[in-house]
Amino acid sequence: ATGNAAQFFVDRHVAEGRGAKPAFREAAGQRRAITYGELAEQSGCVAAALQRAGVPREARALMLMLDQLEFPAVFWGCIKAGVIPVPVNTLLTGSVYDAILKDSRASCLFVSESLWPEIRAAAESSAYLDRIIVIGDTAPDGTQTLGDFMQGCGPVAAVETSLDDTAFWLYSSGSTGQPKGVRHVHGSLKATSDTYGRQVLGIEEADVVYSAAKLFFAYGLGNAMTFPMSVGATAILFDGRPTPDRTVDILAAEQPTIFCGVPTLYAATVAHLERAGRPDVPLRRCISAGEALPEDIGRKWRDIWGVDILDGVGSTEMLHIFLSNAPDDVVYGTSGRAVPGYDVRLVDERGDDVGPGQIGELLVRGASAADGYWNKRTKSRATFEGEWTRTGDKYERTPEGRYIYCGRTDDMFKVSGIWVSPFEVEQALVGHPAVLEAAVVARRDRDGLEKPKAFIVLKQDQGAEGLADELKDFVKKKVGKWKYPRWIEFVSDLPKTATGKIQRFKLREES
Ligand code: 3SK
Image 1 (cartoon, rainbow, N blue to C red):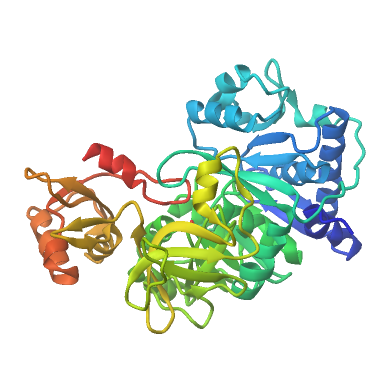
Image 2 (spheres, rainbow, N blue to C red):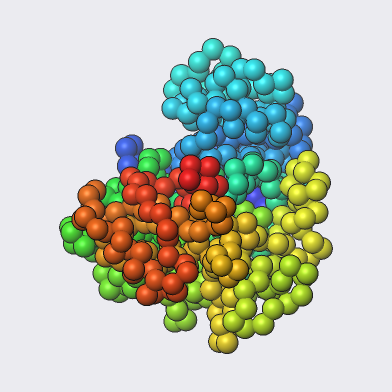
């Protein structure tokens, strides 16, 4: 048997009688759908077209694609051909696409028609790109449509691979902004489905999944592609921006049983639902990742829907969630426990394990760890230490064995000689009824000493007079006198990664 992941996730369903079942449905617009049988065929045709075009195994194919039906066909088509798909964030700038095209040396680009202008200059000046395939009806000069690329090709079978062959890459920009190509092997896809997908999410064939997190992101790729495809379920794809009102419309129209979001969207959707009321939706699981979920939002969501949000932590390097709350074991304000199949440790600066109640860096071990970063030896060696992967996150373990997020290793700072976790101050701030979101960074005072500065998004555009002082007192009372923000700036939004992580480095530059 081949270790090629396409066999398990795609072709197996035809042999098992699910050929006519929709694998993906589009949420809006044309409302197209693709069955498991059609996907097996179309991905086989994409593989055949790549082979006909002479694209060799291990060549990289950049995918700058919206969440549309062609995404799974191209992704699995590349994997079937042994070509390495590299889905990238659709919200990056031309200069970042240029850097990624150079770093990956991609020879193919699959690009959604509406995104072509964003990457055009970088693609046209690339020294490595041989072909550009546009997903759309018309092909701008120097490109061809997916239809023309596949014209006359019949489906081919997936090439033989081992479980350890590289299957795909994802670019991680992390919270510091430096994109790194994270190389994942075929075996990792099934590993995340067998662990988090089956044992925490409990996904089943009858489920309909809607993930507001997009497919180019590791969290979205698991949620809306590999988890549903591991059991023959159906996923809803939406190619637009998931605002709270659109999210509620999609839930109402598509009737998913599983919803996957990020804290910012949950917070804004709760505010929307409190005003507008909720539709009837057969939700049975809701999950969150990307950043820690504020306790208050989890409770409000549960009050509205009668379903808990399972907050978890994952990383692009580990491919999906490895620490999570579980159904019937939810404690809001914590990231839960290690997902079955993963081990976690907390270590101090010397690498020694720290005990309950102490803060340490989180290390994780599990079968879905990446094979390393592409062409970044020093970073690979610093992150992948044998079986253990360093996360760069600071955590504390409760005596009950649950993990509480304390911030990024590089975001922590000391005030009056005592460590301050920006995250703790932010959580205190969002507990105030006027605050929607908050981000805290260190800023030097006139004496050159670091103190917290808060950037705050209010629920209503205008704050009452005296609100800044009220918030300072609020934090002093909640988390400790020395931790209160000495400066408060009210802003309309916070800089975030595609996954919803606050980019504090950008705020540090501004403060
Ligand atoms: O940020 C996370 O928590 C996450 C979760 C799943 C997969 C990938 C990531 C980055």
